[in-house]
Length: 348
Image (cartoon, rainbow, N blue to C red):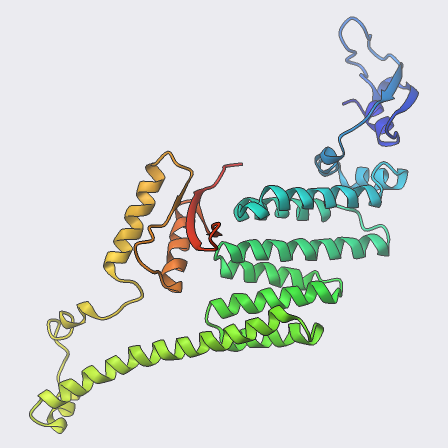
């Protein structure tokens, strides 16, 4: 679009008519336009701006340079109220089209686009600055929830750090950030750090029921983790005691274990069956499933439910899905049963 029309449309409103006289320097200049418009010709335009698409304002605004954005806001073409309406409409669209349908990866991508749009708004006054900080904080929280739903706990934690950095002082938004941050750490078994964030959130909203529930889940997870540790290490000690009892004497066994050099065949063969993070059969199953799904025509597929998966196993499946370029979500069916579903992401 030539500068004459561009500058004029920035000052116009819906259903407005205008007659514009423009010099050749901001029209077609020394090139002209075919046989109809000669070189170095001044031009008169008659313009009727019937309507425009509010939802496309994000793309239009993003394509402008920063001085053009400032000019547009000062002239009223891009008022803060209009920008707020567009952002609100986009938020509603993302919630309806993606979030409520458990399409958390697409929702997170769309929220990221809005954050990029909001950060381009010129901070001409305190009201605009507070709005940008508040909305940016809100959408970082939404992105963090999407990452949590996708079992991307470290990614959600990184997003919450950005949210807290951009906080405008809104207690409700900050409480939500602390809550999500605590949940990220709880699910990663960092219980002390999780408790610290839950306490920060509770100071901001002392009667928040979800925080109270998270404290209960935190205690349950701590007990479960302690039980698993006792089972694992207890089994290790039992094996060592069995070795001691089978030896001629406890002293000779201990001295021999200290002074003798470990042979390659003594412990390696016996330690093949030691419990690792994941059994070999499970790793082979996940690899086979991912390769099969990659070559399949289907866009989504449930993980086989012929067995129960631990939290670590589900997290491993989610990480492997991400390496293959897939997305892993927990979905709830009509009977309130949860299923781990792998989806192929759209390429933008």
